[in-house]
Amino acid sequence: MLNEYLPILLFIGVASVIGVAPVLLGMVLGPHKPDVYKNSPYECGFEAFEDARMKFDVRYYLVAILFILFDLEIAFLFPWAIMLKGDTIGAAGFWAMMLFLSVLVIGFIYEWKKGALEWE
Image (cartoon, rainbow, N blue to C red; front, top):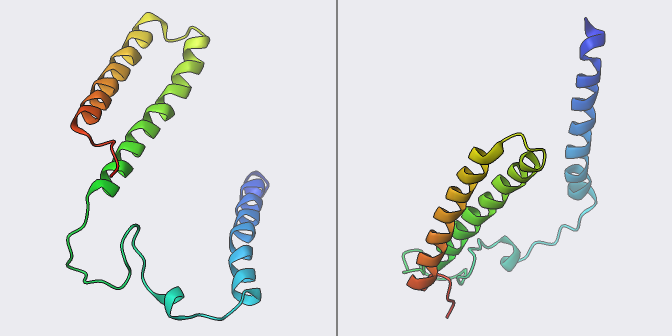
């Protein structure tokens, strides 16, 4: 019974070593010269030494959400294209993806017209 699980256990062991070894090497061999700027908290696009209750621009988050949206679109397109090439999903799969893409294109045009893609 152990012979059946030995490759899986070996894989988990090797993956753990590969994942933990660089972190440990960095901690042991890396330079230990922290300064004030290195230890300060950092948020993208803001000064690190201002009031935490300041008003911030939401455009950073809008751009991130738009990136995730269109990144997921591509993630759905690759398997669909592979299945379409093999002719296993047929016309129904093709038109379902065209509907999906048209909804995304309409959303993209809406965002474009609202000016969410413009950066000042």
